[in-house]
Length: 269
Image 1 (cartoon, rainbow, N blue to C red):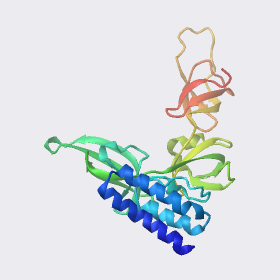
Image 2 (image 1 turned 180 degrees about the vertical axis):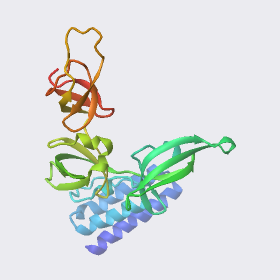
Image 3 (image 1 turned 30 degrees about the vertical axis):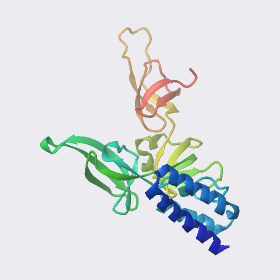
Image 4 (image 1 turned 90 degrees about the horizontal axis):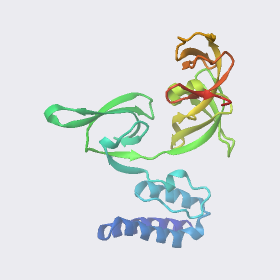
């Protein structure tokens, strides 16, 4: 059994390499898919298959099809690396460089006079958390790594940590609040959030675009005054200060647009 799985896995890999030299990438990928489905799928319950296919996915650039393996890790069914030009990098993207994994924090297009255009990119090293800056030519190739996105429910926050739970599996996860950036101020119990993960390591988090908050303190609205300001400051229950219309009173629930902390409406409107 073991020898059979190993033999067909390695044979399929070398078969794809041979075909890719003679035919198109699409033909090679299709042939590998057929080989895997025909020879390996019948013994997919064996744990060695999952390990063998994972190794194969790392070494090849195609997505392995669904062969009915319920325990297949996410890495098997995704492209691990894709070459893109540096000009395509955006905040949140993840790349591999010199054997390390980095997440893009900021990417800025700059002109270098006679030297042409360049991309100044600030990365965060996934392993150390340190930030580092690289300069690329706009057409320089970089290896982009694709990540997994998962939904979680926020249980509560404490100090600098958010405690999350995955709704389907009930697995609990503790992540630092800074994964959510400035949006961490809006985190509260029962809020649905999303995490980007690479090999089960959280890279960044996001919250809903619209959240409901309670006005803790604001100036009272005085009726009959014609020259009332268009907006006034309001302190929310999460500690943030935002601009709200003059008719909003203390204790009201309002909807805030989290991307720019702007007032959207009353919660009941």
